[in-house]
Each structure stands twice: as structure tokens, then as C-alpha cells.
Length: 303
Image 1 (cartoon, rainbow, N blue to C red):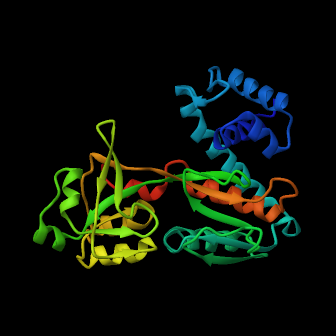
Image 2 (image 1 turned 60 degrees about the vertical axis):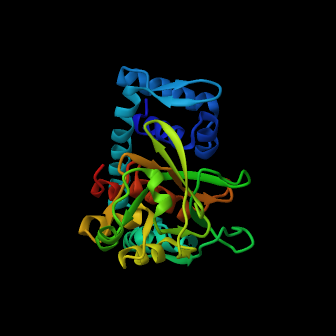
């Protein structure tokens, strides 16, 4: 058995959510995908996935195996990069669309590392706080945080996008610290123009809770809301990929840690798997390896 390819098939099935989607992505037949999975399970000595017609879920053994497979595939990729001839390296141009907040907080550093590794690639970043039409605007790749994907596009999951409710110490000294999510209705909440403008969604003790909120500052991107929160203007719900540093430094204080804001998926979205340029495939693999299932920025946020 080609164990490296078997691991690649396993990871792809998990990322895309089904064997058929993985088969299309890897340009393999469905029986070949199934055979790779069965052989990997035989080698590991345990069942890795529970497979039904509607849902795919990892077993406990699968949850242990998945990050190790990702690590081995990353090491294999690094080895190939180290010995690859320069003429084999990705080259050309990529146009990437991304929100201003994620672009500034995370993607710019990732792209800088990518072009250091592959200097033959030129990346044009489009920082846009709106949903772009990939075909009309000639976008090769869009980075989006959403649980809903346009069925006409292909989405590859990169990571999870969590949020945190927070405020500056000065605001809390003046207005008090909310003890329950319902208390947020009595505070000045800084809201996003497109997400949760008037209602914030939480999971509290296993139940879904919707809290009506209002405030005197709204913005169409999260960086502006964070700056307003740091200035003491009110309470904000911010993505952890952006707020982690301010929370770690003490500029912002996390509130209501027992209440979990709704999680979104960080997706890389593109138009088609067929005739995918090698440079686009290379960028997708790089971003998936960098951001991971459990992103680094969440490690700095205490529960």
C-alpha cells in the first residue's frame, strides 16, 4: 500500500466531507478511494470513520490519526520542496479576495511566507468586505468565513472561525461586567453591519440563546469594531483570529466565557476542480497546512 497516498485520501475525505467529493478532487474513482481508506484502517488497526449515506464522522481512532496524517503529509511536502528543481516550483499570478479583517490579521503573513518559499508566484490581494463574483472579477481564490457555500462553487475547509465577546477594562470599570448573556441588552454593543447587527447568537449550557443588542457604533468590518472597543466605546463580538493579540496583551478582556458565540467555517472558495492551475493547488495546500483544524491564534484565548 502507498501509505502516503492513503493518508492523503483520508485527510481529503475528512476535509471535503464525503468520499465522492474526495474522489472528484483527487481525480480518483470512488472504489479506489474506498480501497485506500480500508487499507489505511487495516494498517492502523482501527476503524477511522463511521460512514453513512448522510453523514461522515471520525471515530476516536480517527480523531487521533487525522492530525498525525496531516503532519506526515506536511513533512513529505517540505521534503519535496527541499529537493525540487527550481523549474518545478509554482509560478504565475494569483488573485485572492479576502475580508479586510482576516486579510490584515492572518492572510498577509501567510502570503508573505508563501512567496518567500515560491518567489516565482505573484499574489494580488483584494481586501473586500463584500461577496465577490469570482468569474466576473477574475478572482482565483476567495477566503470566506461562512457556514453556507454557494453550490456553484467549490469550497475547501481551512479551519474554524470562532468569536469572542470582549471589552476594554476602562469600559467595564465604568459600566460594569455583564454576568449573563441577557445582560448584553443593557450595554452599548458595537455591531457588525452584516453579521449579528441586532441579535447575537450563543450556545449556553447546550442551549441556543439569541440576545437582542444595540449600540451607537456599527461598522462593516471587524478591525474598526476592535479599535472602537479598545478605545472603551462598548462591548464587541470579534473573531478570535483578530482579537487574540489584544486579549493576550490585556487591551481587551474576554466576557462570558461560558457562552459560545456561533462558530463559522473558514473556507477557501474557487470555481472548479477541473484544469486547476498547479499554483492554485499549491496555495490551497499551503493554506490548509498553515491554518489547521485548531488554529494557533485560539491557543492564546483562555476558556
